Image 1 (tube, one colour):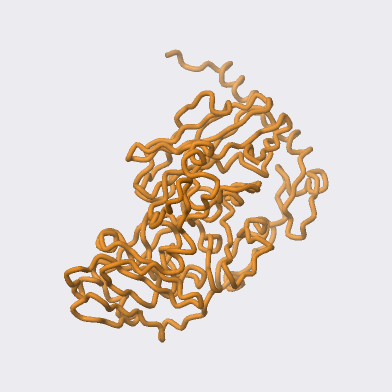
Image 2: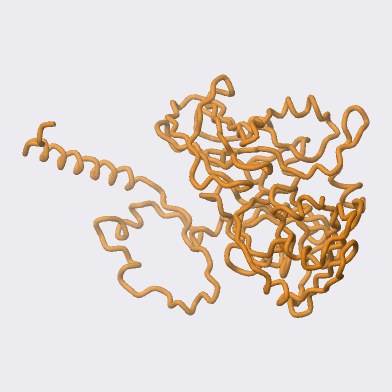
Length: 428
């Protein structure tokens, strides 16, 4: 390899200077938005804060630490909030969706974690909260929160997803949040349910554990004993802090990979039984009528699924050229093995890069470098999990489950890109 000459070095310096000049010209015509007062200023109006000048925020000390006793996002990010439907009565069967298209990585901040409740969010004093464990056990027990926290703890990263995320009927929604925003991922800290059950001693015939929440709906679900003795957790912390009230403070059940409603919040009772209880949530809800008249019940696991979050519905590509396609994939059956991306409406597929760590029953971030030619097109992703299961199309799902189906829609979701760069739902 030949050494660079002085001429080469001078050319490199000249190229860098040219790039900086051209970049400056481009920035000079840009519009700067997102100011705290909501007013957009052109670069020329704000030239004093642009390079090579020293911006105003470097000339005086900033706000003191004591101004924020609990940290808050920058005011320039005030638009990144939960997506709460305006037509829902928020104390009955309500939900708030995670703005997936605005997030990076795999961990959902606690303030943006999706919520779903059937009778409002109760305010529970942890000093008065108790967990009852009874039924087919040798020794019925009542635990305080201090008792629960005396057990050996563990922390695990898992996703949670509502089984109605999204429904099978139009309108499907405009953004990634509208479609699959009832999905989030966190690091959970708590106690192995297996340890707690062993403390009470299981009797012969113990096949199910019926969990009940302390909300006004007294949401109740039946869990197979095999899951309870596997990776089920009684959790009291999320992403390093105590659970938020919307996430079940002070105690919730966590069943990795199972549909969200089974992860009972505000957990107050565990009854060990020989049979499921067939509660309201197991009959009038979370059961689907099939085309042959039979009903799908106890559809515990969330199937493999993925969605592109950037570019996605509601966003706009600024110009032709390089763009990174990125999104998330997940499966209740284990790890994501592969994510394929198509940029030609499913005619061909290419494998995306998976961001580490790739964890079981957690969100996995995928990325694909892409050069957009400025022409209209359709992009989409499909996930493959470690069992070999391949995420289906919506048409494939409907052909099997029919039009009366409501839950467990894990279909491929395509985004349409217009010549002007606008991104919309291709299934709308």
